Amino acid sequence: MSDILPFDDPERLRLLLVDVHYGGDRPWEHDPDVAELMALTTRKYAGLAAKHHRDPAEAAAAAWDVMRTRAARIADDPWAVITHAVALQMFYEERAQGLLCGTDQVRTDDVTDFHDADRISDHETSLADFHPSFWSLDDVSDVEDPLAVDPDSEEPDAEPTNAWVALETAVEFFVDSGWSRAAAQMALECIAARLIRTGNKRSTFESLRRDPSIRCHLDIDQDSWISVLHAVLGHDLPNLEHTASGRGILKRLLTGERYDELFHLTGIADAIASAAPVATERAHV
Image (cartoon, rainbow, N blue to C red; front, side):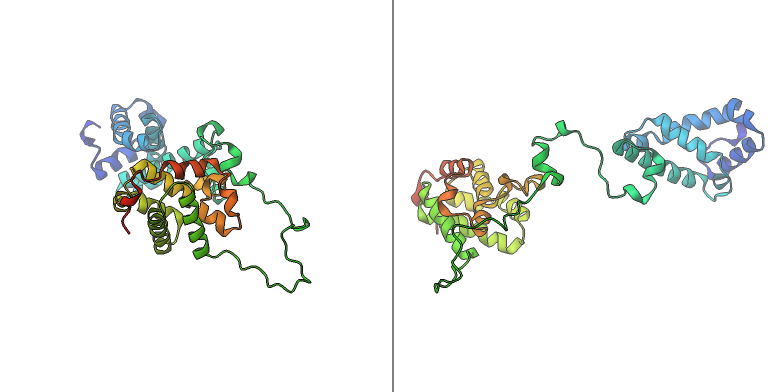
């Protein structure tokens, strides 16, 4: 059967597969053309195997299983059938390894939305901080609020903190932390304007992080500017969204935290004070 080469021709590959199929198991084990075909297959799918973190021999074994099927023998292009089947098998084996289960389970819809198993040591933050299963909200409906308005009082209810009030309060916090009023207003108004335009915190953070114009006007370096963004918007990592690090001073003020409580947040207060422009009068407004 030496005249069947080369195997990259679909018709010649099909002839070889038909020949060895009707020859029983012996040709698959002893035919030199089959040995050459499997060597070619191992090289051919080595890149596909590496993409899915598998050994090339595993891809060759998957291809061997497909070559023995009727679908490969009757296909217009046997290589297309084999490649598609090997790609699926490599994907399922990679997913099965990540999910710590068998390939049969991965082929069902039951695990479609699951992510790969994580080791706790792979995360910089503690498990309780980043995993939503450990988040909880205390039920304080039965706790008397000492600041609640007496229902029998004739005084009107206090107006809730709106965005503009929160922004002005944040400016005062910056001023009390060593910033000039002009620099504080410029920094916070630019952040608020960008937040309104982008519509979410993460896009706002990325946009401002890459925009050097504002920090150049403020005359602060990149690290100080990042510290300001983290203090105002909160940390931008998704796994810290519901933690203390993910809540910036704007969100804290909007959710009812008092002005004096901000100074107890040493990480935020120190970051803003350290980022204050040295030459405060150089802030352009």
